Image (cartoon, rainbow, N blue to C red; front, side):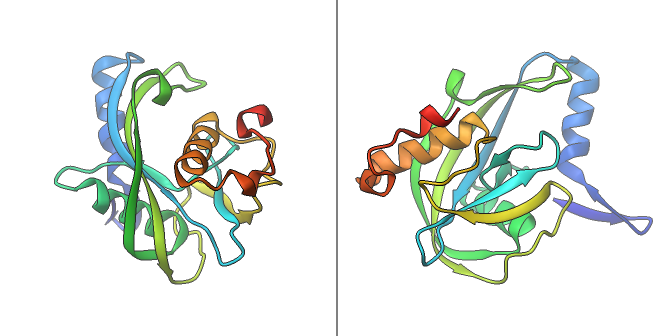
Length: 177
């Protein structure tokens, strides 16, 4: 969530996590969030080049107080891509070691992440915040080499659950790591 304070746009969630970090240091945090899979008409998947780690991932982020997982998915999609969706379909839930991340500064996070696919998209692809360096659609057989492992795992899970592994032409996404 963003608020304008003294003419400056501030990420409130970032401030919340910073406040927690002041209390617990680099100890693991448990953060709940949502991730959204978006395909265009050519069946290319939308990825964002993240500004913090300079790797490609999927749109998504942490839940804010009072939000549902679906609200979080819709908000993050809009904030990070300028796109809106009226129809989300739940795909899977990630947690535990599957959703663990160690940041370069030593901060640790265990996520509990709901993964959705946006089945109807509206709006223009636009970077509305500073979390992304670039937004782009990629063919599933030509994904960038510098992808976040979690994004690869999510895409792999989606393809297996949806029975669309033929899109991959027999190729395992995990091999791209």
